[in-house]
Image (cartoon, rainbow, N blue to C red; front, side, top):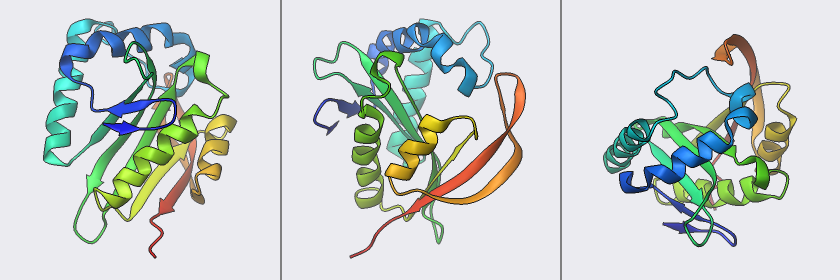
Length: 179
């Protein structure tokens, strides 16, 4: 568990799948423009139980780190941040994806969550590079990444299929600062 001033980050156990299901149900419209199309199984408890079991196995294997940010009472999901595609060897890098509940948007929560999670990824996991890509229209994401020290590295045309359409993405990365 990682603590921030207003949240706690966990690899959520499968027993708490209802919390994540509620997050995605409550924020379905809010998140839809930034996510792939989902099938009818997506917003079901069995899906989230499986997702969380898989997330725990990936965490144990060191291949993915899927953090869920909860309010201090652990009654509500504030947001999520996922570090996936972890590459070891000479690369020591991963991809970052994240989302925040509509009700917490614009209050600095995402920056707070990502600062704690990235510190863990750099210092405890030992990564050198975290890559995060965003759609040009997603100004909030661009602003958060800039505040966190991500630098633009390129532009990828038709990078991901989001909301049923191939979308361009701005490619960014943050490299670990060594003392």
